[in-house]
Length: 532
Image (cartoon, rainbow, N blue to C red; front, side):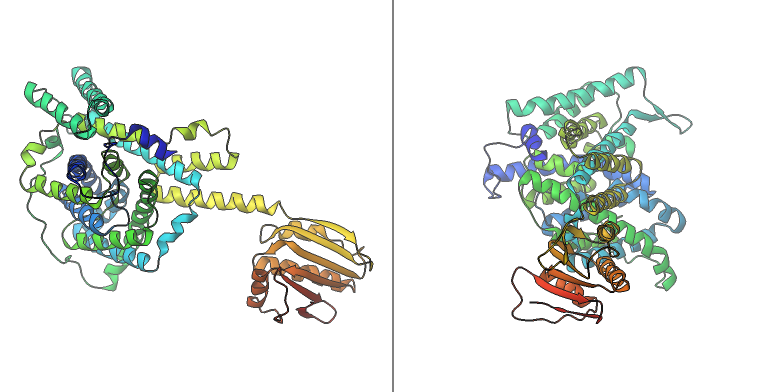
């Protein structure tokens, strides 16, 4: 779905190969894509620095270092990382209560945690995120990106209060935003020599500067001029008290950073048709944040908006991410005056186009055709992403999906019952036996009225967990109380292993059939054995 939409609105040169071979055309596309991303990174890094309560250079240094390291060794070429709002909102209280040095120490610990997550391959658990959760995440993040741009339609009054634009200022801003979006929309139909977002920024900036139009510019946010980031160990006491302060923040930041990065990894993978790299991305994010903490940066993670700008501008290799980071450093060191003249309207127009390309519009059309639970999960994740943050949204979505799955499977347990030629009652169980279906399993049987021998056949079922074993033992106790015998048959090999791990007496034999195990549970003797 997302890949189809991206293909329709891609800004990339359709004649240029995406194989990653560095032809002159490919290098040009990668460098221009990197330049476009770097321009879009500046206002984001500055704005998120204000959110976290730190100097803008702290955010810019983070965007440069995290972007460069992950571009070099990350799990997905073409993906862009930098200073993000999802992390900034967590940092606010830490900086306010303890100062920026504690933030740097926290970022170092955050990076170490992410490295460990990569080493122990915890990134593979991103596979447990259902598709409705993924769609809700994408839609919620698109709304968050859109809402973040609305702050650019505000101005600071003489009393320092923020107020919405009105009159001529508002119409000028809206007109320039619309012009930028129109250029991005039409440019691919004219030429692919320059990425459409870069063309939109350049043309609108030239118009504003040439005619001296009075609209907000990048320099109105803050000056981005600075020097090279310098190595420094965070000046915090090396004590258990310091660890007690920074550990909870580091854990939350590490989790949020990895969740956003791995979901972005999957999203970019859909568009670029690449898979894997989750563990590598965890390690790369960890190394990047560890280095950032020692160089005065506030840490970061993957950025879905800038990643979409990059891949839609044609960026497919590590070169585009490296170029974006280096261009950003050049802006800080040498070109701050020029970059500060770029109108914010041009960058807002670019991000609005990212919102249009990121939002999964087809998800609105399929809401009535998919199961109600999936639709509810999608909407829930979208709402929680907007109202809270994406980490909580993803966790909530996964939990609700898991509970819905368990509930649906709990209702599948049933049995076919009948007497065999020996007068024994045979129950053919169908459906999984686990914690959610144990009550339905118990209701199947009639210990009081059944004959003296009862056979429970698990050919079409699976004993999944300890709750299932307890249900079997409880059933056996009921038949024992009636002086009757119960046999368990056709337990599969995995069920057999569960029974052994639960401490039951199970005898292995080379003569066991391939299709499963036949287990007798004689309640009169209290022994569990094999019946071949």
